[in-house]
Amino acid sequence: MPVRIPRAGSTEMATFGLAGVAGFAPFYFMLPGAEERLAAQTARWAPRWERNISYFASPAQRIAQRVEPRIEKTVKRIDNRLPLEKVAKNVDRRIKHGIDRMSKH
Image 1: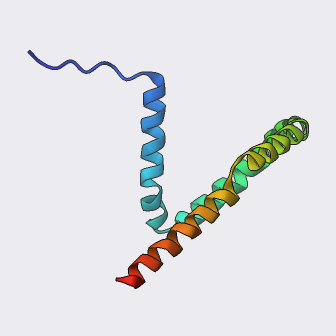
Image 2: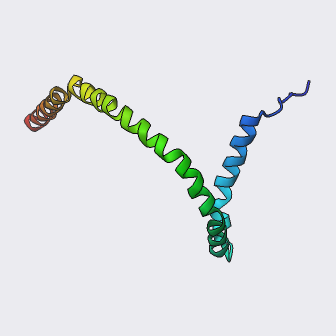
Image 3: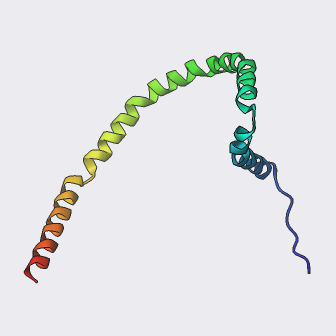
């Protein structure tokens, strides 16, 4: 009985396409004249990208400012909760103990 492979969904097709572009990009840049083509495309599309990014920049900045205090507080709480000093002292003690044992033999 032949093995039936299901049809690829849109997410899989997008993933395969992105992988293909990322995989062949180095070969594209090895071709002669690639820098000129890339510069021409950048000059053509950069103004559009800059207009579109300004649409997202200010809301993203407001969200980041609103979320930053909570994230900072959480990071500090995690740092205080972790027993890093105790772990470092135990590792140091074990290393010294191992060196002492090896030097006796």
